[in-house]
Length: 404
Image 1 (cartoon, helix red, strand yellow):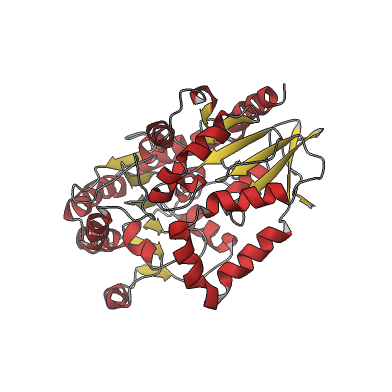
Image 2: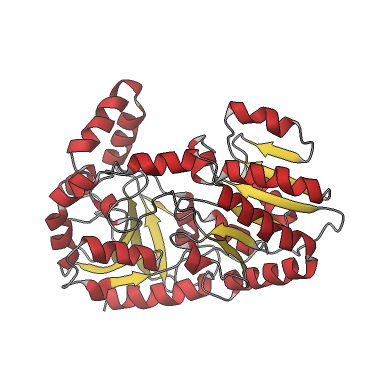
């Protein structure tokens, strides 16, 4: 077992929380593992079963078979069940923190849920078939808390499960990032617009789900009135659109995988983050707030909770022909109206473009407003709802109650 001890914000560590995940640890979770509540430390360990499954998934000849199996097998339940049989995590720990998976072992545990059906698999048909298994495990006295990152996902859980016996276990814990030790500098000659589809490996699908074509169209319109703007796009762009980008010397494209320090420089030197996304839970938004950037973002899912309109950024209305959801399905799962969602993503959302032009134009023209919003955004990370301190106060209470 590897131990990731916190290096900041914790001194005497006497209780161990075993972090286990249904997949390799998502980078967003390292701000949890490395900055735990006082009195706790996280330990991680990939079992032989984990490594075996990862190798299977990466094996080209088995990839198709596994994807097809996921349609009929509740892989989200099978893996932790076999883990319980193999008695993994036998090393001493006080509490299990399960990320997007349930725990069958008779140990105290809490579960972090992104979307409720992830606990079974991506396909909602499987979720409905095995929902009683999920409910029985969450009712169990060993399950101490059900954590999620947004009020909208709390509603998702309440809508899809019979929560009568465990509703009091559900807690919303916002993601948090550490303070950024830098002094914001401003380039008075130019206004830098930043669009980031992903902080990790950019994929082509992100161009549509994160609103790339609307951002590109917005820039071509704004450029007619503002010659002091530049756009940095951290996204993979369809080949058919690269010709448009090459016409503008003030558009810079970052498609390759780059170290975080490279992206951090972009955040530090940007003036506005533009994020007309159709997708939930992109922690790039909180990163932007921490780097003192006002955010212009779609008012869908958790973003109404994360960005305060007119204070830390601007919310724009979501397009009417994209069927958003929180009740009983998610973007990655097949549904009866999935084709409408895909079609909406592929179409240029002209109402979104108009709103972007309006709101970004206001920020381009009003430097004092940009700075005021940016400082308010940074305060949310350093002292407010996205601060490590606020998150850890809540987690410490939850962990203490779980072990009382």
